[in-house]
Length: 150
Image (cartoon, rainbow, N blue to C red; front, top):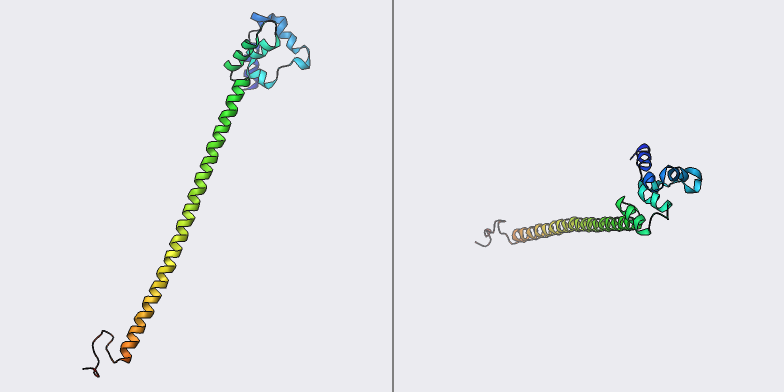
């Protein structure tokens, strides 16, 4: 909301009904009486709180609640902020767990590839040993007996 809109809303607050023109003008008589930015957001509560003779604490709180400000609204906003922070923390934990799982899967894939490569090397070495043994025995590499055995 723009500053002008706040001003219009503040000027239209129920001063004439409660305190009259003099009551509205008295607010501007001293710097300590000037409304704060929170007061500009909830002029009804400010009007009531600046005229305690005419407003009970219940009315002040009710006006503050109606305008979305005051202790109850602040507590609700803090609770909402805490809930959003907790949800963000939960999302961070889930994201971190997913990253850990992904890293573990990548590491497992690397480990599996290394094991497979080692197994292939062992199989190749065994195949060479068998072929060498067959040559020494005079057998054909395909397993057919050589001329000395036949």
